[in-house]
Amino acid sequence: MDHPRTVEPTEATDPPGTPRERVAALADALQAGLVGHAALVERLMIALLAGGHLLVEGAPGLAKTRAVKRLADGLEASFSRIQCTPDLMPADLTGTPVWRPDRGVFEFVAGPVFHSLLLVDEINRAPPKVQSALLEAMAEQQVTSGGTTHPLPDPFMVVATQNPIEHEGTFPLPEAQLDRFLFHVAVGFPDAVAERGILDLVEREQQLEMTSASAAPIRRLTVAEIRAARAEVAAVHLAPALKDYIVRLVMATRDGSAGDDVRAAIEHPVSPRGSLALAASAKARAYLSGRAYAVPEDVAMLAGDALAHRLGLTWRAAAEGETPRGVVARLVERVVPL
Ligand SMILES: Nc1ncnc2c1ncn2[C@@H]1O[C@H](COP(=O)(O)OP(=O)(O)OP(=O)(O)O)[C@@H](O)[C@H]1O
Ligand SMILES: [Mg+2]
Image (cartoon, rainbow, N blue to C red; front, side, top):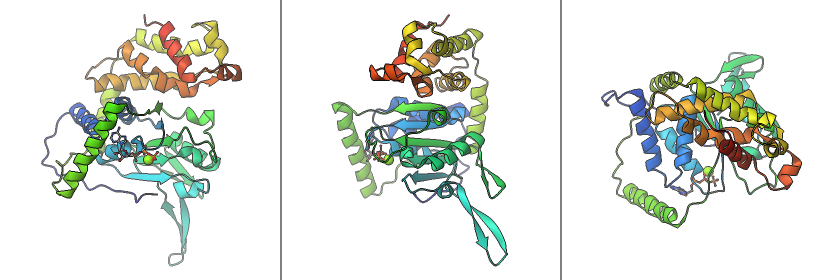
């Protein structure tokens, strides 16, 4: 586990800016530290604004940690990181009551989960008990230990990573727990141009570090600003026709209205949590684009990352090479916004 970081407040002399301007500046700062990964940056920002958690899937070395660390650098909120291993215990995550002989009492020593931004690396290497302790904390915003309930910080955001190639010694997340994540984002390998960009970016950073020319200080988004932005996101207009579009997309995973092939491929359809996730994230995407109303594109662009991990395919469909993401893509093609 990395050393947890608690943040000193930034100076009060910075220009204020509206919450939306501050959020946009954070998104820009995040993107400036990454080559490509625009979708990941957008999903991170949306999760922050919608109060959701992110599951990021990708091979090692694709800047997953880097992206989350940069987000942490841009937030005036505490950050912690856990590397999951098969011998991890739930208390390693949540904390544990410790006997204080001087006072004759048990005192709860909070674990790394008590931070506003939590990076959980290789969540599928943690044993099921640890996974469910984490997922429970995520769903309830609290931890119960020794009969006492301890509230988690607000905001509280988990970014969990998963390595798709390493299956040995892993515990796949149960479907019911996957549903707790707002998005499941897959990050892919860079192309040659991006690869070259990464070399240049890291070289520039190293040179800056050597000359100890400190980079321009970033102004961190405060908790108050995050809350203000969240309130504005909640007020973004989601037209009735757009709500119907979301409902029809989700219903199509249950009733065959987007074709019998889709219905036949699906074993577990999307729950109402899926439509709620899509509605909340479409609003946040609209807000990031500077709109006070969501449009069908907000829904269509996010449907894959918001719905695919909530779908279970039949074994036959899986054997035929169907993927949840492919099925959602077909839904989006066939269900047209009115
Ligand atoms: N798209 C990218 N933009 C900027 N830097 C990148 C990018 N991809 C990789 N890197 C660089 O590659 C190195 C590895 O990144 P990082 O440690 O964040 O990977 P990771 O996805 O967390 O890997 P792991 O799964 O092994 O933890 C870092 O030095 C990072 O700067
Ligand atoms: Mg990493």
